[in-house]
Amino acid sequence: MADVTLEGLRVCREVALLGSFTAAAHSLGYSQPAISRQVAAMETVVGYPLFVREVRGVSTTPAGALVAEHAARILGGVTALRRDLDGLGDHLSGRVAVGAFPAAMSALVPHAVAHLADAHPGLVVTLAEASTPALLRDLRGARLHVAVIGVGAGLPDYDLAGLRRHPIPAGDLCVAVPADHRLAARGAVPARELAGEPWIAGAGSAGDPQFLAWPTLSDPVIRHRVRSWPARLGLVAAGLGICLLPELAAVSAPPGVVTVTVDDPAWPGRRTVALTVPEPGAAELAVVTALRTAADRIRPV
Image (cartoon, rainbow, N blue to C red; front, side):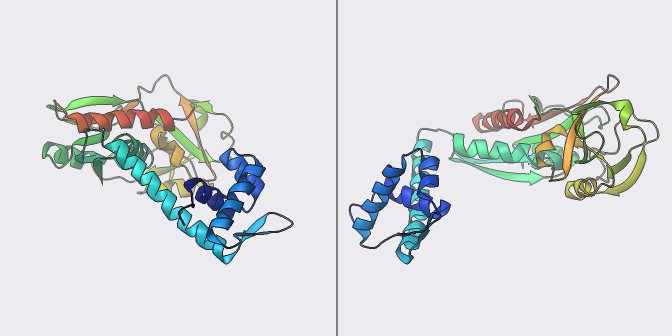
């Protein structure tokens, strides 16, 4: 089967996935006649018809299903080969251990790890989700290379002596509300409009950020306290209250939940920082760069 081509496999797989020559042509940027020629060439090579032409699109024959199945594996292997070859020119390799507080693990860190996989395929990233005191202990004990924490108003005055701070522009706090809430379409609201709202509060460990109500509100109404972010956001989606959410986790809000920013001159704000040893190596600096890139991608517009 020396005449089987990667392009032919790619075309046949796309037709099988989309069930249409026209849709495959649009997806791959080809004309429909070009798709038909590729399929005809592949049918000649394999010696079997690959698709059954129907009134609305096409379906695969048994041979077509086999070709599409093998095409997925072959094309995936070619992509992996290209990535590994690109990595030969990258001097970064080995392992780097990254830890973060739970909200940062919902979106910021995963996007950063994905960026690292593309930019530095030889770098193996291990992850740890923990409270800030635990992250600081592990960083000082060389069990972590990079720790992502929150600092600022309402948080403990963590001892960061001997550690280097790398600011990550991941935003401040926002508020998650049900999609049909009166504030949902506002985008940004004055803090005073949050007065009287029922809040879904966190129940974190000692030393963790305690996400209660908007920090400058007096006597907020706390309706429920739950530990995990999925539980908090699930209660919001069910219309049982609203909750604080770091902007760096806003993209992880489930269906039925939207986020709004809060205009509050009295709130000094919180920041996200990545911590390393004072003289970080190239791998640690690559992680910091990836975190900053991820922050730019996930922050609400």
